[in-house]
Length: 397
Image 1 (cartoon, rainbow, N blue to C red):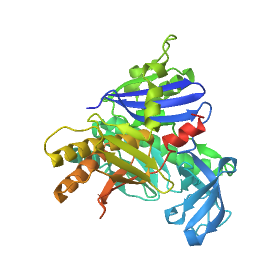
Image 2 (image 1 turned 60 degrees about the vertical axis):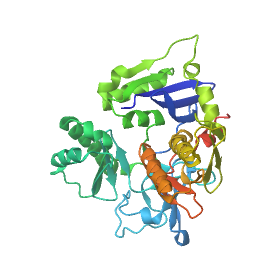
Image 3 (image 1 turned 120 degrees about the horizontal axis):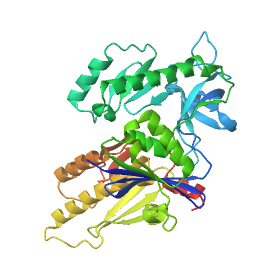
């Protein structure tokens, strides 16, 4: 069981959100004070043009922001007015949700498949299937199936989250009704709002982190910003009342919350290209425009008489730290890792299996794909938010 602390502090015009597991910094995000992310927001967008040769449409949302919409993603669009043909055309107005922030030189991405997320469930449009988290136990899936066997959603589907395994039926069903009401509001009322309106805002990172945490693991929520404190308090009362007692407002004037948790050092380390491991080995992390390259080096590690056993220990330690660094720096897309070379093929496959297990703990979808012919490990991680490097640059750090 991982004890989780979520820290949100405001200093020097920057709002920093940090998540700690067992005292170790695992996630960090930065945002200029007074600015909010558009990720997760739902808009009435307007199709500006369709480019068939790249299989995409470009949709205008709030403040004239042009977003990328893959045409293959347009399965069951919700238009603001009835259409005889469901085919997307220029000038159409429809509900879209921002599914990825602007990353590097790429525009934000939107989808017509809306996701309404709760603690136990995600209600989705665009399909009618029921999916289950791979982290749910078999007996929990069987129990939940009995709860939902009579639910009928002709134009929406459900994803059962990991937290549902700990849910009581009454709380589970209450959340379903709440998500269903949100969906009805969007499809019956929100569609009549003016074009480019934001009809539902996404949650900030600290609320997403709270919602995604298991109640038994969530130890403390701490903030020194009064506005954030009130927002979290209201959120907990509505969504997770069992956790309201874990929220605390930090008021010590002599030692800032940022200094108490050494966030400045944590940020400096997370922005550095070189990461030392406890063994004396180190990682070099270099992002490029197309992918991220990670190199594992033996460094000062000199323990052990058996060379191959020494290399195995270094690579195993490195794999665990790489999984942490992906979360901490919010690295995404394609990642190539050059581990210290191992002679035995079965050890390479064992390392790949260990990497897959480490990545299973990541709240973001991440996977270890394979080992290339040159011995590089291929990883992928879903793109949603900007990397920590980009966030720091926006904050003037």
